[in-house]
Amino acid sequence: MTGSPFTAERLLFTPANATADAVPTIFAFPNTYSVGITSLGYQVVWATLAARPDVQVSRLFTDAQEPLPSEPELLGFSLSWELDYVNVLNLLESLSIPIRATERSNAQPLVFGGGPVLTANPEPFAAFFDIILLGDGELLLGEFITAYQAVRHADRATQLRQLAQVPGIYVPSLYVATYHSPDGALESIVPVDATIPAQIEKQTYRGNTLSASTVVTEKAAWENIYMIEVVRSCPEMCRFCLASYLTLPFRTASVEESLVPAIAQGLTVTDRLGLLGASVTQHPEFETLLDYLNRPDYDHVRLSIASVRTNTVTPKLAATLTKHDTRSITIAVESGSDRLRQIINKKLTNDEIIQAAMNAKAGGLSNLKLYGMVGVPGEEPEDLDQTVAMLRDIKKTVPGLRLTFGCSTFVPKAHTPFQWFGVNTQSEKRLQWLQKQLRPQGIEFRPESYNWSVIQTLLSRGDRRLSQFLELTRHYGDSLGSYRRAFKELRGKLPNLDFYVYTDWQPEQVLPWSHLKGPLPQATLLKHLSSAREHFKQPIEAM
Image (cartoon, rainbow, N blue to C red; front, side):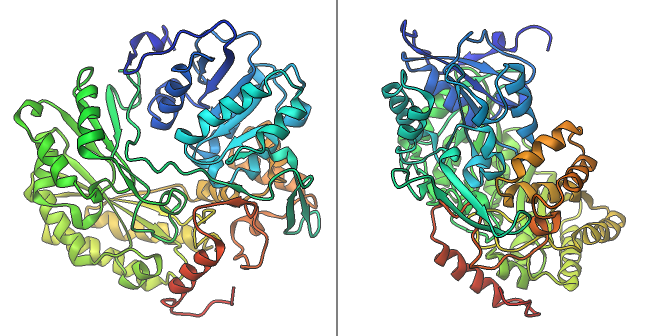
């Protein structure tokens, strides 16, 4: 990167002057600066650390770094995408720190990690981290630093044992996994002794002041954007959705006390706002927020909004976005099949989707992006026919509106009711079929890579035997071929790809994350799974 990207930053907080005995810390994002600095989670954690006088924090990206301490005591990673694990390992090596936690000495930093990937299922990456923070940084970070200060001068083993007592702090090395056979299912995962908690509970922040950008820069992937978290989690609870199930309960930021002051602060450094959240328009005071943004003194502001719920796309919302320089809106519809939407708990009808398209055009928007999915448990070929029919209907009813259909493959995620299902082996063919049907209709079809969905599933359902496997794939070049080659080499030492990716698991099976407590108990997830199965056409083998 030419020149330092840090010089272009405009800070929205005041870093503390570190005390002489502040803890030397590196906080890394395992991707480029422009990607990492666009992560609101990374920004907020960095600012929280930088605002503490007892921490001296330096940032590290794959292509940029601040001056790093020569003897760091803590090295943190914020992991937002599974495949960035390769960069975690590369950065550890670049700092001359052993990749495996068990090989680190007292003189080396404690390596900690957090973020959505590690909170959902840290097990494939367990060998690389001394400590994993499960849950929301607002609560965990302060408690972690305070607990570390108390054992700062102890040996590594003592530090880890003490830190493992803090709610939400997971120390993988203090848990032992056993298997039915080297290449069989997990039998148990238990603490090394009775002094270590048998279960680690994800920590949930329940306040009504959510996150907002702590830095704005033209070097971000979203140039000069000031991001505001309007809601956290989602009340819809689609049964495949990690963003909903893992982050429950649904929380909303107070418009008067939180959002209005945050917007005012952001607009002192930029005229571009991004409203974030899994379901922004379901904020109970969203209309009030729209009215606030529609004030004449905000006419110059450019507004971006995350994916919105279909039945909240009103002409007023569309007109507000158009006025603020947005030409497109994104809604997740998953399918054109009512039965399939009942399976996944998507409370939505085709009529509502068509109405949203009409409202989008009436408000002046020129592009509607729809998100769908193939391979959803219980899906039949006729469900795809209904998706194509729905898209044709939109095209016919709302001529002139540019229609884009992005489509992914179902990937099972931990802590959701669909965590027991494998990937549908027909998914790739179904993506190809949709492409064939939609392209001639003038509908832009954007399928996500099926092959990478397979790898994503491997990592989202993997156990800690995958750590060795991941080291090997990186050694072979981290291409799709590398994964196959690594499975071949480790044959007999871990289950095959089918077990992790395509097999439907039994409810009584010990899951890799069974010792990590999410927001809902397994009995509730099974109840939600049972409700979904009531709409299956063909009974599949009992789970």
